[in-house]
Image 1 (cartoon, rainbow, N blue to C red):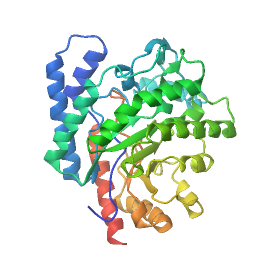
Image 2: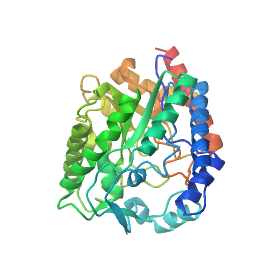
Image 3: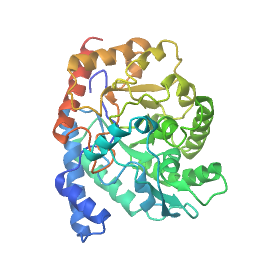
Image 4: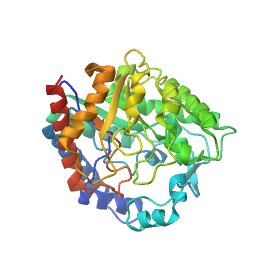
Length: 376
C-alpha cells in the first residue's frame, strides 16, 4: 500500500452474463437460481481480484448482487409493498428537455417510484446477506487485498426510496428501519469487513424529497438521520465504519445541490471514522477549501472523490495527484484516503461511465495516489 491508500465507493459494472440473469429474475422471466448463484460467486471472485491487481488497496464486492444500493433491502426486510410514484431531482425538473434526453439515452433511471412501507419493518431473510458475505470472504482470501469493505443502505436513504405508509411518524419509521438493519450492519463487521453506509439522504434528498424545505429545515433532518444512524451502529467501532455522502450519481446540472458547507457540521457528528465525499465533479470540486477552517474530530479520516463517476473522461494521474495533495496539505497524509466520487453502477442496468472506461479511471486513481505519495 502506498502512503495514500486508494479505495472507491462500491458499485462496479456487472458482467453481461450476470446482468442478464439478474434482469430476467427482476422481470419475472424464467431463470436458473443455481446458475445465477454460481455466476455471482465467480464474478465476485473475479472483480475482487481485478481490483487488487490494479492496485486498489481497499476493495469491495462491487455490490454485484444488488439491483441498486438502496432498494435491495425490500427483499431482506418485511413490511414493503404497494407502489409510489417517486421523485425526480429538482435540477432536472428545471430542464425537462435535458431530463428527457438523459432518460432516452439510458443515462439516468426515470422516476419510476418504488415500494412503500405498509407494515412492520423486521428482518425477513438473511440468505442473500450470508451469500454476499460468503462470496466476498472467499474472494478476499484469494486476492489478499490490503483491506475490504461492504456497502449497506443507511436508514435515512431507505426511507427516501421506500415511502412510509404504516408508521405514525417519520421518526418511528426511521427507528424501525435502523433496528432491522442493525443485524446486517453488525454481520458485515463480524465477517471481518469494514461497513460502508451509503447516505444520499444527507445531501441528495434535499433536491428530491425535501425540495420544498429551506436549507435550515433540511439540516435539521440531516441531524435527525445522523442520530438514528449513530444509534444503529452503536455496537460497531468507529474505525470499522465508512459513510458516503452523495448528491446523486447522475450527469445533471446539480445547481440545486445543497452546499457541503451547509451540512458539514452535522455530517462530522456521525460516528463513522471515514467520511467519503464528492470532490472531483464540477459542482463540488471546490469544496476542499472548507477544510482550511473545518476542524476534523479526532480519528476522522477524509476520503475525497478524486475521480468523477459521471464522466467518460479519464482523469490524468497528475490531476488526481493534485486533488489528493490539496487534502493532504490541509488535514495531513495520515487522514486522507483517495477514492471515486460515487459508484460506477448505482443501478445495475444504468451506467453513465462505460464499463471499459471504469477500469481505466481506476488505474488513474491508483497512479495519481502513487504520484502524491512519492511527493510527501
